Image 1 (cartoon, rainbow, N blue to C red):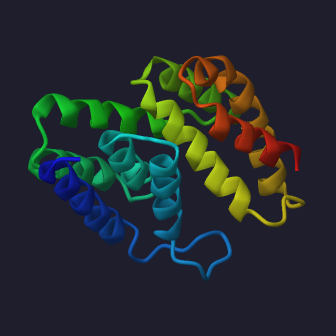
Image 2 (tube, rainbow, N blue to C red):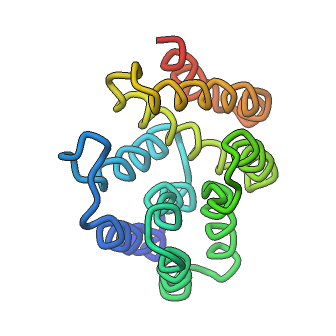
Length: 184
């Protein structure tokens, strides 16, 4: 990896840490930043490029910040990260595809629309999404509550929707891990 890529990852980490500074996981105790860190680690472990690692660090910034601030944060990062503008545009496309559209109120419709965008996005977006779900499912603990049941149900639908494309791209190991977690 080149120095500019390593520096861009470091800057993505700083941006994610700041964006999620006062947020906690569902348990109310664990700092939220542990999730993007886990996703980025999984992406790297499964062979993701610097683009995928950066997208993993930043994947929840737009969803989990107030108003348009997430978009401004990502835009500011992409303009100053030092990466070639085509690489920055690719990362932007990946993060956008990983971000659910909050304006779609119906959960099933929102999930279907997100799946369509994931399947049309740059290929490594699928790897980041698989790692995101692996992280969330392995962190959930009790899926007996309504949120947990819905999340597991949505994960099963997502798995089915991503299965063929993930296999085509060679993401067999994370796909198998995801499969085991939704069966657990």
